[in-house]
View 1 (tube, each protein chain N blue to C red):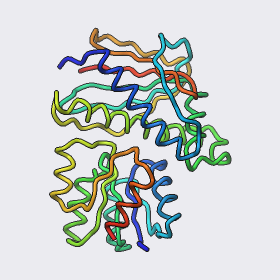
View 2 (cartoon, each protein chain N blue to C red; view 1 turned 60 degrees about the vertical axis):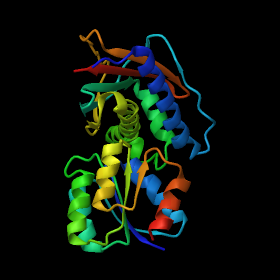
View 3 (cartoon, rainbow over the protein chains, first blue to last red; view 1 turned 90 degrees about the vertical axis):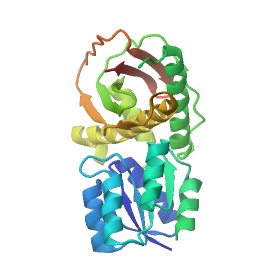
Length: 118
Length: 161
């Protein structure tokens, strides 16, 4: 079971991810509503896995992934974004994310991605 | 940049149907089938706006009544009657719910047109609420769609910059 950090500016999506992961026995170690908070939470909690949104106000997901990877090259990050364009997916994969999930997603898609990542 | 109205409406309807089905089937709601309708004759009390930047340059607005917005918010995971008993709590739920639905819709539109126009970024959703919101569209190329949902009518206004 994994300790998970959820980074998303939408409380609705944080709730959905939290519910689905908790049902499978994972622990939500922290939640953040933008990339800056997410980076701080990562440094503080060292989670096993991060779910990361892309479009956020304070620091977007791509920048947050870059910053987290600077702190920990082995960080496991799953992008969960409404934007699923090829260029963005390629950028995220080049940065080292383990998967890219496009919103809205079926719960099975999230669980399968988390299981593969850990 | 030219976007055909029929093609846009098809994309919006398909995208909305997919979004609502995934979100609400999670709550074991009945399957959702959407249709377009004529102009909405209802009070606009909520408007959610997202801007497209890059391949597509423009704005998309979702407008509806507060009742419709609240019905949608209440049907999504995490709704708490106590928190939503205040005006501020209701606004928060509506912004969260409709904002995220619009985020998903804008993402799907950007994806749907990436072959034609390239990569498009979207802004975070902004919400305006009030009584009798009046939206004037000056651009002749603007597209206005009205979608019938189980929660009520949703107007989608797309304006190219």
